[in-house]
Each structure stands twice: as structure tokens, then as C-alpha cells.
Image (cartoon, rainbow, N blue to C red; front, side, top):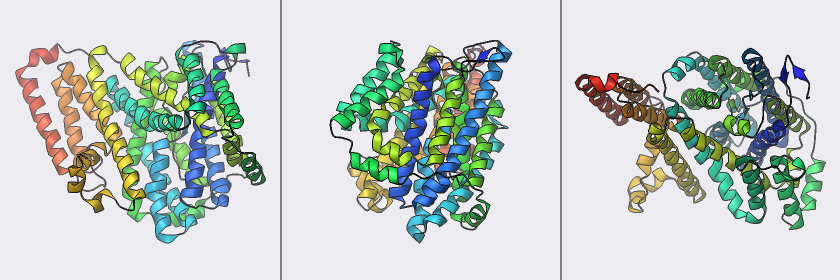
Length: 511
């Protein structure tokens, strides 16, 4: 793999760090997903390991292969050897959304896991179409959005959805996780070489696994049981299941539209992150790859969309180039086809893997400030705020669900008495990735005295709110009327400012 591809090296030493990081990221997500499907939805093994996982493996591999080729092409065209391929895998936010908002309700209502899977396929198909359509407006939107807006909301994603859970899991078993985390921080953040030049990601996993077995945290019996269930499976056409899912999708189809929009915004933000790190990929092409990969997945058995991953800057900083992404895709393919995920879960402690995700959160959060103009730091911070609300609401909802109730059943007034401003949290966090971009873009343009541009984003917020794309739990006319009014009032203020302070606007700084 160390040969050249028209002058571009297919594999360099730093790719080992990127490979162990990205593969671990993908593997962790697949392990968590398999656990949720098997033990949360009680979905049978033949669906989880026989249909969904092989389909996911195929789509992740196809994405990785194309992004590997895109990286090689970019390196050739720009005559650079430091191009880093885009990382990709199953979309983590959508993974939980589809399980708990789409497949879960179907299963708990019908007790039919196959039906839940079929509805998931139809939902993924529709969302993929929305994502493909979004690819045609993504380049224009990216060119008119301040970098701080895209990286700020991405920092919110990385902290709340990528870092917080791994951090809490790490502190539950610190004698394993702290060792892995320390090695990762020294190797990736401190840029120190490991003994024998072993890749830091690999050493972190090996050390954590060794401690897990030496301390009795892991059990041999679990390995034997998991090994007995290993079975090779191919992805198979799922057209009939997809068609059946369409007959049942009506109650859930509305959520596919805003989440499809969410997906292409997420991809657009991650492309901006790659650009900030020095790799300018074609926005439309990369977003189309995601959309068509998700579409392929829905046709062969996967209800989970594929996305460009957060983390490009992190893997680039540790020396990864183009080979790491393809190598990760190949290994994900093998893991999913061979059905060894339960076996890996029984051998490698999850807490030895999750510190790598914590590192990604650190890298993306830092990049939001480092790659944006320093004057836009407030914009970066406000871009994170909707994600904090979204994360807080999720924790509250999960806790109330475990207690057999919900915020709506309990009542907003009771929660307010406990100083939990649930209603505001729910409104602010709905459509967090878009809300974060809007607020951060408006703030950046205010900082630069560019009130006309701030007006456009405020009007955009009003339109999206009116139709329930943001600040609402469902699509419809006027479903978030008061936020829409608020954005219109914002826009009116900006219009006044642009008329009465034209000198400042003309003298504003470009973003």
C-alpha cells in the first residue's frame, strides 16, 4: 500500500493513526447500534447481523472508496502529498433518531421487528432523496455562510453528541479509560512518539484491552458465547421490504424531510472543516456521494444514512492522508460481512475505545476557534448553544422515559418548579444544527457590521420556523409561529441598521 498513485502516496506512516482512529470510531458506532437494535428493540439476530450490518458495511465501504479516490485526485490536481481523505460512516445522530423515533415506535406498537425494519428502510430512502436534492443548493449556501457559523454549530455537535457520552463512560471505568485517554492525548495532542513508534490509537486500544482482562472487567465466557454466533452474511436486495415500508411510513414521513436537511447541513459543515484544514473538496460531489450511498443502503437492507464524519482536521493533524479512510472502509466491510461485532464486543472493552471519540470532540471544538477569525469567537460560542439545549433535553427525556413518564405527561409547570426550563430547551434545541448556523451567522455579520446579510439569515430563520423545520417537533404551517415572529423582528432591526449606518456596513470585514 506504500506505492504511488500517479505521484500520490497511497499510504504513509500517519495513516496508521488515522486508520485506528476512524476505524475505532466506526466500530464503536456499529457496536452501539447493534446493541440498541438487539437489546433495545429486541430485533432478531438474522435482521441485525444478517441484513442491516452487511448493508451498512457495503455502504460505508463504497463511501470510503470514493472519498479515497477524491483525495488522490485532489492531491494530483494540486500537486500535494498532504491531502487527507474525507472520513465517513453511519450518521451517528440519525442512528439514534431512526431507532428511537422511527423504528422504536413501530416496534413497541406492533411488536413486529421486521415491520419496524421495513419502515426504517422507507424512511432512509426518503431522507436520502432529500439529501441528494440538498447537494444542489449546498455549494451556494456554503459560499454565503461565515466559516464561524458552520464550524461553531459543528463544535456543538462534537461536544454534545461526540464527546460527552464517551467522557461519562470513561469516568465510569477510569482505571481503563484514563490509560487509553492519556496515550491518545500524548500521541495526538502532544504529538509525541510512542515507544517503538507504535501508532497512538493502536497502543491506546491494546493497553485498555490488556487492563480490562487483567482486572477481570472482561470475561472469557462472553467470548466463547459470541464466537459461537459468528456467521458470514452478504447484503441482499430489499426492494420488497422497502415497498412494504412505504405502506406504513405515513406517520413518520414528515420527520424525514427536516432530518434530510439536517444531514446535508452536517455534510456541508464537515466539508468546511476540511477546507479550513487545507483540503478543498467539491461540495456538491461529496454531498451527492453521501446521498446516493444512503439510497443504496436502503435498497439492500440498511435504514441508516451515511455521512461525512466530523474529524477531518483531527486525522490530518496526526499525519493521516488518503489511505486511512479506505483501510477503515475495508475493515468495516469485513466486520459487517463476517458478523464478528458481538465477538469484538466481548474482547475489547468499550471504554478502551471511547477516548478516541473524546479526542475528536477536542479537535473539532478547537478548530472552530482556530480556523475562524478571532473576532468571530462569540459567533462560534452562540453556534454551540442550541446543541447544549438539545443535549440537555435528550438527557431529561431519557430519564423521564426510564421513570415511565414524559415531560408532556408531567407538565411544563412542574418542571419549571424544579428550575428545568423544558419548553425553552425543546424549542431552542429543535433543528439544532440549522439553528446554530443561523445564530452564529447572524452574530458574525453583526460583528462585521454587515446588517444586510444578517437580515437574510434572520428571514431564513423566520421561514424555516414557520414551516416547522426548526424550533418545532413537526412540520406544518405556523408550527413555530412565535420564533418566526422573533426572527422577523430581528430582520426589521437589521434593516433599520443597514439604512441608518451604511458607512459601517460598507466598511465591514469580509467573512
